[in-house]
Image (cartoon, rainbow, N blue to C red; front, side, top):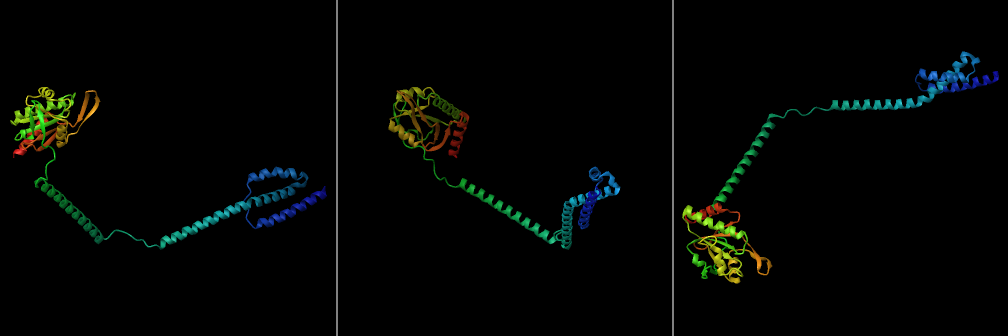
Length: 319
């Protein structure tokens, strides 16, 4: 028993000597009380009670020294890296501070001369822009005034000679209406709604123009359905709207020629036996005393606007 204890102590002394030499090269952190308390039972279980306090204390020192040596390298490494980083940071900060300290502070308020030059340049640009704008507006006004006062470039190519038959069976041409103001409307007697509405508007406007200004207007109705609108059919139709309404019809070629002269579109639609409709332009043409085109009025004009429009054109013509 004594031999075994002697060998064990010699071995522990050797280990303790080596650990002490290795530990002396680097500082060891203090061992916490918790670690000491945890290791004490282990020592008591390994070292026999008969060895006394010195043996126990020796075992504790050896164990704690080896624990500190085991833990220390990681802590020392991390601490060294932290210190190195801290040192680098301090060195870098110091270099930045020295760099910032070495820089000269530039800038500051601009000089009065620069400010005055800036203001003068801005005022010059604004003045030039305003002047050019006024000049451009003046040029536009002069150009529009010259157009209004300049000579006419011509009239619309609407209207022309025609040779048709009126609702009384007489041959008439455009010359029969020279010296008179006429309102011309193209339609057909089998029209279900649009033609009757437009002819009623035409008749009402003719009467209002006579009442307001005393101007005589000749209303003309030209059929675009010569196959069904013969003289008798047209005669019965125009009587329904106004006593002065003149109905005109003719052959297929004659109607085609007059429609082309007045730029009127028309075409048969949905033909079933003899029952069909005719799609056509919905326009009234105001013709002057020389049977030249003056103005047209569309479906959007009501009786009042049609009346006022015709009166305005007649007064302008007489000036």
